[in-house]
Image (cartoon, rainbow, N blue to C red):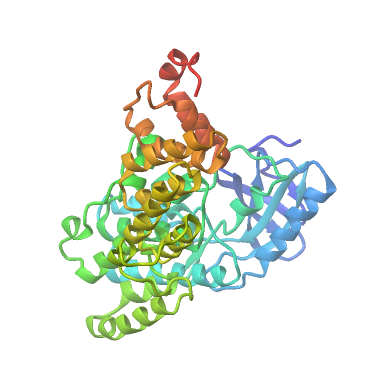
Length: 444
């Protein structure tokens, strides 16, 4: 098998490798030329550390690449070819001679880009993301290094879908999708969606328009905590010339909860690029959109006070649970909590009721009470997997803060986290090894 970084002068497929352009998490990037078509200059990405051990795995990889090749958009870097070279997969893509956004920001030396220039870049990348999302594809690793410029200065979104291609069940890869300074809170738990890309674009917008990253930390654990728990400094405090509506749009795109972000990338781009008049007109459209998301989101429910009214007909535990679930789906968490507590009053040993109560408390950010609710659910049903996982999530933040005690057993947290992100588990294990060793004899 070829060793990484040793391809200059070699023939890969129908292309001659001319020089190395750089390397990244997924492998090396080289400038190449077609050996038969004069003047066709391309970029060749050789993906290191990816082993396709069967014909089926190779077929799956190529099929995914062919699907991405159909993402024909003026602001998405085009894929021309995909194949294998000495056991390693490679992609032939459009050559972007204008460098990357990361390089442009480095030249700014901590100063923000002019607002018009930044908004033009964000608009072009936003259009690319919206197009891909409509095709059912999520980028998952949006960052300045993946935004390139062609010879005309137009922005191109690169590495679209490579993280998806490399993380199919059958392909073995060391690493995790995403770059910590630009990852959405849910992405640290292995959960991704279109709105995760929106969060990442919000982080990039923040950096372009302030000259600073939204969060700066010394390691991935601290970075994860900041994305999950802390609010960024308001952009206008870093750039007093920034219009307030742009600040609001950025912070909304960077909301901790996915449902608090914009419905889609287009809405975010329209808002950040709008004038005061167009924003006023657009607010009505946004409201109508939200009101028509789904029947579940617009479910009609009574006020919380009605739940505990003594004049209501007596309900069963299951009826209270069903009602609580309806409130929960409508994101009326206080009302859901009241319904779950009514179910518990009927059956104090209902593990489902205690677990659901914990989930409502968690959404209300009453984390200590949520932890106690999950522990009660486990006490009622020791093998209740959902409650164990929820408890693990509640122990997530104490681990990050270093507030470890014998009552907050890290193995519980790690076993839950391992299911969603083994690589992150490894990093956290290294960080808390001294504590873990001293408590290794204790049962979770």
